[in-house]
Length: 328
Ligand SMILES: Cc1cc2nc3c(=O)[nH]c(=O)nc-3n(C[C@H](O)[C@H](O)[C@H](O)COP(=O)(O)OP(=O)(O)OC[C@H]3O[C@@H](n4cnc5c(N)ncnc54)[C@H](O)[C@@H]3O)c2cc1C
View 1 (cartoon, rainbow, N blue to C red):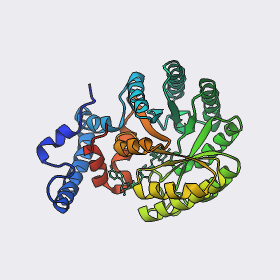
View 2: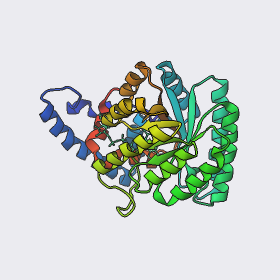
View 3: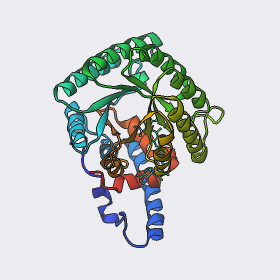
C-alpha cells in the first residue's frame, strides 16, 4: 500500500503553514524544499523500492486502481467538483501499451456512467499511440471520443511536448466537428496565441494551461512572468471569441483576472486544478458557485507525472507547500 501521507515524513521537521515567524518559516521551507527535491532525485537513482517517490506521487495521484479514481471522484462530486480523470501513461512505443490504455478508458467511461459519477476524461496523445503513428493515435482518439459521447462524458485531449502539438491539433480538429471534445493549449509556447485564435474561430473548447514540459527558448517563453502574461493575453482572446474556456491553473492572480474579465466575454468559463495542489482553493471556488474540475490521475505509471509536478517551473518551495497543505 503506497498511499501514505507525506506529512508524516515532515512531522519531525516542524514545517507547517502558519507556524512561527513567516519569513523564518519561508527560509526554512526553502532550504528544506531543496533538500527534499534532491532527496527525491537521489532516491530515484538509488531505487529505494520506490517508497519515497510513491509517497510523493500519492499526494497527487488517486491510486493505482480505477476504483481509487472513482473514490476520489465521488469525494470531489460531494463537494460540487467534477473529476477530470486520467489514466497515467505516456510516450508509448508499444502498441500493446496503447491498446491496454484504450481498453481501460473504455471500461472507465462505461463504469463511471453506470455509477452516476460527474467526470470528464483527459487523455494524452502519446498514450493513444502518437509516438508510433498519427494514424494510430487518431483512430484511437476517434474511438474514445465516440465512446465518451455515448456515455455523456466530455473528453479532453492533453497537450504534450512541442513536437506533438501540430499533430495533436490536427487530431482534435477532425473530431471536434462531432462535439463532446476539448483540447489543451499551453501559454508558454509562442505559437499558442495563433493556435488559440484559430481554434476559437472554429468553436473549439479550450483548456488553457501554462505548460509543463522543458522547451527551447526559440519556441517557448522561459520565464514565469512572460508565460503568465501570454496566458492572460490568450485568456482575453478566448473570453471574446470562444464558446467554452477552461482556466486550468493554481495561480490566484490569473483566476482573479479571469473572474473579472469573463463578465465582458461571451464564453462559458470553468476552472480546473491538479489534484493535491490547491484542493481547498478549488473547494472554495466551487462553493462560490463556480464550475470547477480537479484533474485526477490514477494508475501505476506515475513517475513522469510526479517528476513534472516536482520540477513545476523550478519552484520547489511551491511544490513543498502543496505537499504540506491539507487537501481535503
Ligand atoms: C487541469 C490541468 C490540466 C493540465 N494539463 C496540462 C497539459 O495537458 N499539458 C501541459 O503541458 N500542462 C498541463 N497542466 C500543467 C500546467 O501546464 C502547469 O504546469 C501547472 O498547472 C502549474 O502551473 P500554474 O498555472 O498552476 O502556475 P504556476 O506559475 O506554477 O503557479 C502559479 C502561482 O500559483 C500559486 N501556487 C501554486 N501552487 C500553490 C500552492 N500549493 N500553494 C500556494 N500557492 C500556490 C503561487 O502563487 C504560484 O506563483 C495542467 C494543469 C491543470 C491545472
